[in-house]
Every structure is written in C-alpha cells, then in structure tokens.
Amino acid sequence: MALDGQPLDAIIISDIHLGCENAQVRRLCRLLEGLLDKISIGLPPTRRLIINGDVFDSIDFRRLKKTHWKVLSLLRHLSDKIEVVWTCGNHDGPAEIISHLLGVQVLNQYILESGGRRMLVMHGHIFDDFIDHHPVLTWVGDLIYNVLQRVDRRHYVARLAKARSKVFLHCLDKVQTKSLAYAAKLGCHAVICGHTHHAAAVPGPIAYFNSGCWTELPSTYLEIGGGQVRICIAEDPEDTNSTAAQIACHEGRDEALPTPWSDQRCEPVGGRP
Image 1 (spheres, rainbow, N blue to C red):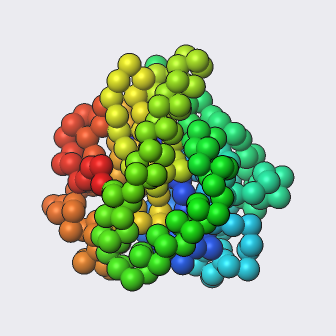
Image 2: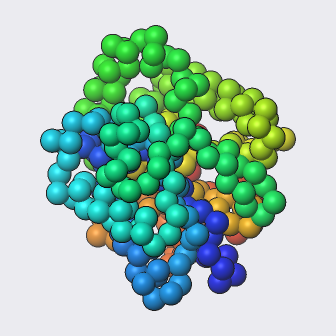
C-alpha cells in the first residue's frame, strides 16, 4: 500500500452512506481494521485519511445497524492515531451535529499537497444543481436505484440503468466540468470529488479523479502518494463471487485502475459504465 516503504500522503474514501441497506460495511471495516493493525505495529500506511462526503445516508441515526456503528468506532479510533479529514456531503447534514461523532472538524473543501502537486478535495454536490431543482425526482431515482441493487446483488442491473440514464451521465459531466474550473481558480493541479458514485481518473491540464462509493460493487477508494493517484478496489475475501472479484481477476496483488499519475503497473479493472 505504501510507496517504497513510506506512508502514503492520503487514502480517500467517500459516499459510505451509513444507514443505507446497500452500504458495503464489511469491506470498509476490513480496510479500516487493516489501517489500524499496521499503525499498531509502527508501520502507518498513510499519513491521513480523507472522508470525502456522505458518511451518512441521512441524519436519522435509527437506521444505523451494529456494523454501521462499528465503522464510526473505527473511524474515531483512527482519528486518534492519524489525521482524519472530513469534507461535508449533501447527505451528511449540519456539520455541527455530526462532527462530534468522529471527533474531527468537518470542512467544505480541503487542499492536499502530494509530490509537489496541489489537489483540491471536495464532495462535488454543489456542482449538481439537479438535486436542488428536482428533489422529488432525485428521491424517486434513488429509490428505484436502491431497489435494483437489492434485486441483483451483483449490481449489474443497477450499473446498467445508470449507464443508460441521460440525467446521470449529464450529472457526471457537470460535476467534472465545474469542479475542474473551480480547481483552476485555486491554482490546483487536480480535483478529487465523490458524489457521483462513479470512480474516475481523467487526464488533462488539471486532472479529475473520483473516489467512487461504498454502496456499489466494486467498492473503490483512492491511494495518493508522491503525487501519484490510483483507484483501488476494496475486496471481500469471503465473497469470491463478487462483481469486484470477477472484474479484477487478481493474482495475489492489489488491483487498481491506471490513472493519469499512476505508475501504470496495475491492471485496469473497470471503466465508464
């Protein structure tokens, strides 16, 4: 995980949506427990963990299951060991209500410096005006998508529905285009968003990355070190038939998408739906 034995500059996760039936908490717990285990033996794999929005699906904490509370507990323990940064998403609710749960400050955006590159980290929902202009349609769309995920645990049907949705594809383009313009104003070399639930790495004068989400398969996150960014899959060793396992076809090594700044040694495991 670390580069040349040195800790990564950051691991970025987003769109956990605790309280949602489709939250892939088992995979996330495995990742977080792995971080804590390495820290406990004096080999921290990363200097900081960045949570790029939508930790919660809603602020109705009655929806949280035992495993969801375990995720919060692990994040709280990590915040005592390394720097944990939380950027607020559209599902998280007021920052003053939720920040005390992890003992970290909630920010609107964060600039990460890695290998001489300035990377703007923000959830990206402020660039998606559809959710503000059409709240009912957004709610209906989310409901249908969640049902499709429950019907097909491989999430193939749900991903196919997104790929055919003009509204979703328009949202992808809008978040990418507007976030890049905003990053340019701040003098950043890259922008890293969440919100769309679609992992992405797009080269350009300013690179665009998206960390994906933890409500779909494959569940993805970003590793950043020495100015390099790569998209990684969170695998579940107990689920050998998962979509992630079928796509990755791994051979005992971490899988990642080649990205504009990666070392290109990892096999591609996915693309635009």
